[in-house]
Structures are given as C-alpha cells and as structure tokens.
Image 1 (spheres, rainbow, N blue to C red):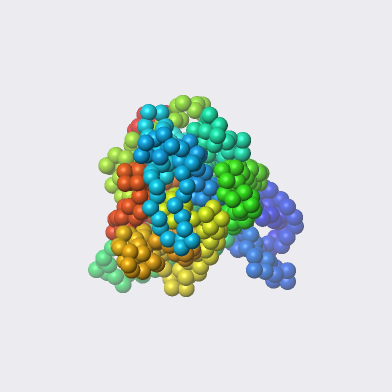
Image 2 (tube, rainbow, N blue to C red):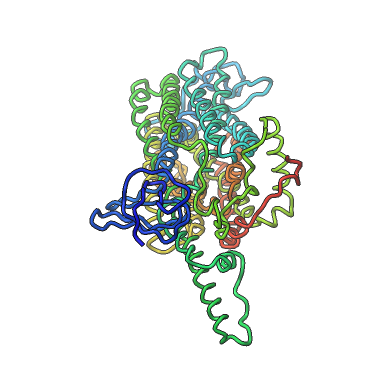
Length: 630
C-alpha cells in the first residue's frame, strides 16, 4: 500500500494514523501497518536513500557511505564530551599532575637524612649516560604531623581522590538514573572539575597554601569521575539506537510475540513423541527464527557498543594529543619549571570547560524511549525498564532522600541473593576492580618512575605523553578491525589485551637483576634506561586505548536497563601502589604488585558467561521498597 505521509529523521506522520508524529517534509512511503507511528518501509533508489523499517517511529536513513540515526545529535553530544573530558586525563591526570604535585612537594620538602636541608638545594643525580643513578637521599615533605616521601605524595593524593570519587558516584547513582537529571549532573561535575584544574594557573608552589594543590587535584578527579559515570550511562541507549541494531530490532516484529518471549528466557526442550506434528514443527521453526534474530541482535548490539566506545576513546586521545603539543612549547622553553606544569594543567581545565558546551547543547535533558527500551510490546526484547529498573520521574524527591536511597540500594545490590541473580555482572566487576587498579597504577606511576628513577627531563616525559595516546588512537581503531576480521567476542579481546598489558610490569621486574643495571653486564633492559620508556609507551598505549573502550562496552552488555548510572558508579577504582612506593622508597617494587593484580583478574574474566549475563540483566527487576525506598 502506498500513501502520502510526512517523514522526518525522528518520526513519521501517517495519514491513516490517529496520533501524528513530528513532521518535517513530504515523501512517498509504504506502510506495513496503520497504527500510530507504526512500521514503515521507505525507499527511493533514485535519490539513493533507503530508510529501513523500524518500530515505534524510529527512523534511520542512509545516504552514500554515511549512516545517520534518529539520535545523531545525542551521539554528537556524547562524543563532544569525550573530546572535552579525556584531555584532562591525557594531559593532567596521567602526565602533568603527578609531576606537578611531586614538584610542589619537593619545593617544600627536605632531605630525609637530617630533615633540615631543602630538597630544592640538592643537585639531582644525573649523567649523560641516561642510566639509573642512586639519589643523594630520599626527599620527604611534612603534611600535618606526618613525613611523606615526595615521590609518593601525588599517589596518596590520587588514592584519596579515588576513594572520594567512589563515594560520590555511589551517592549520585539514584539521581543520575533519572533521565531528567543525568545531563545536569554531568555538567555540574564537569565544570566543577574544570574550574579546579584551571585554578592551578594562579597557585604557586612557593605559596603558603601550596598544599591546596592536593585539594584541587581531588576535586578535579572527583568531578571527572562523576561526570564520566553520567556520560557512560548514555552508552547503552546510543548503541541500541545505532542503525544496524534498529534494523535487526524491526525484524522481530514479524514474529509472533509468544515466540519473542520464549527466545529470551527459554531453552529448547526435548522433542515430544509426536514430533511430526505440523503445529509442533511450526512452533519449533518460529522459535528457531526468533532465537536466530535474538543472537543477531546481541551480536550487533555488542559490536555497536564497542564501536561507539572506541570512537569516543579515539576522539578523546586526539584532543589530548593536540593540547599536549601546545603545552610542549612553554614546558620546553621554561625548562620544565613548576609554572609551565601549572600552565599545562590550567589549559586542560579551560579546554574541558569550553568543549563541554556542545555537550550541554546536544545531550538530551530527558532520554527518549528507544527500541527495546520502552513502548508497547517492546518487552519482548527484555530491554525495557517499565518502571522496575529505573525510578519514576514523577513525584517529589529531594537530594538528601535520593542519596540515602542510593546507599540503601547499594546495600541491597551487595546482598548475596542479588549477587546470585546477577552473578556474571559481579564476576566482571570483581575482575574490573583488579584490572582498573593495575592499569591505573601503570599510568599514574609511569611518569613518576621516569622522572624519579630514570631522571627523565620534562620534555622527554611530554614526548611519552604524546606517544601513548597517539598509539592509543591506533589501538582503539585497530582492535575492532581485528575483532571483525577474526570474529572475536568482546570478552576474548579483553582477555588478550589484559595478557599483553601484563608483559609491561613483568618486563620492569627484570630491572632488579644485576645484569640489567650496568653492574658488569648489559646497560639495557628491565626498564633501566630512558630509551626503553619510549618503546613501552607506544606498546602500552596501543593496548590501553583499546582496553578502555572494550572494558566499558562489555560492561554495558551486563547492566540492568534503566540502572546504568548506578552500576557504572561501581566502576570506581582504587590505587594501592602508593603504599608500596612509600614503604620501600622505590616505585619499581610496584611492578610486582601490578603483575599479581592483572594476572589474578584473568581467570575471573574467563569465568564470565556472557549470554547468561545478558539474559539475567534483561530479566532483572528491582522491587523498590525492599530497601526502604518510596
């Protein structure tokens, strides 16, 4: 049947429908049903445009090689915030902040031997061979009543910020899962973190309030972590709105609903005695078709999630590289002075704030229902919340009550009965806590190791900071290509990345062997020379960039719909390497810790049943009131 109607990238107005959708312009379309905003097939080969059939007014059009879905603006907003916020990680958190905090502490510290001689007055142990030299003495700074190694000062600050970050994201989980509040939370924490980073421009290490640098670091890291939790909560809906996923979702509408439901929760039973019954054969055929489409949907959704996540990482790293190249000019010309380091951190804050503006414009204040997320009959996919997975937007609520509810909800989530219901999600969380600790420790200690143990100059450290995200871009784009080429699952890619990453700290442990320390043997190997740091920066970047994208993409597959922010809040990390460095005075001992942490996570990762985890998450319904919520 051909009829005239109005078509827009978001919706269709059918002249036979009782309820109009938002019109944009005239077009010829074929309606497969006459319900309001129902399934349509629109083609115009002359114009080279094809609109795939979708359900519930979800239109997707393709022109040439480009695919544009109904939530293109939302995707642009999401990517723009990745472009804005990742700069803080690349430029400040992993490069200049550790150096700057260590320099702040050293400028105000004393040599451990007598605690009267300023560390700034002691000459650094360094020679032209670029090999490791023993320092004249450990430098310590007094914070309150305690003396802390200056090399571990930034690690302690980072550990505190991670702990507060975890408390914050857990407290905000209940609010961030309200679609109307998610964008507001993201922007508040984004601009709070950006302002804290920008304040480094006016804070000098010679100031009597130099210790305020620790507070600014904590606030900026908390702001970053909380805003990224809100950002990641958009990822599942972005993937479900991708053209390939929407297309497969439409295929299910041709299958009877009972068979749709059985494909989600049932396993084919043994055939009955009268297996030749025509009705039985028809049901089995329908079940097989529905199961096949379900698997196609899961595969497409998994690929779309990792693709969008990888694109966000690549754009973020690209932004970080751009600002690093800009920061290289003042840092090099000022010979790595404290002011040049503060300037680089402040610029990352300015960048973060400015490029968050497009996100403020394009991200939706209220998330619209998507295929499989809501609407009539979409429960067949098991992807909806229908009031069980997410809290009702109506009614009165207050900040205090929502924070209290979030912590009560956490208590329920961690009950053994709930853990068993989502056992595969919690298995992955256990592996993630180990891996995030390991990977974050590598990134946070690598620069300090190069500065304090290998005596690398700031310009060399910046070069490492450029090489790592550059190779990270290549890795985040290359691994999805390898995945498509060999048909790997997201889980298999994650395991491979973890194994490759573990080789870095294992190589660093070789530096304890006398043969690699220039004692009558080789003067290369085991991370004892500066040249090795450049090669490992490229290697680690190619692994870490892909790991970040696949870690959050794989996690998105195991989340109960409507509770994304709450569960991404549990993605908080801890950092224990500072205790090792401070107790021994040698950051190299952290390499043993890293090897142990990373390899401990591998068998946990391999135990995750992905298909069962997806099904459990889709069927999960949290009953509000069991923890005292209203």
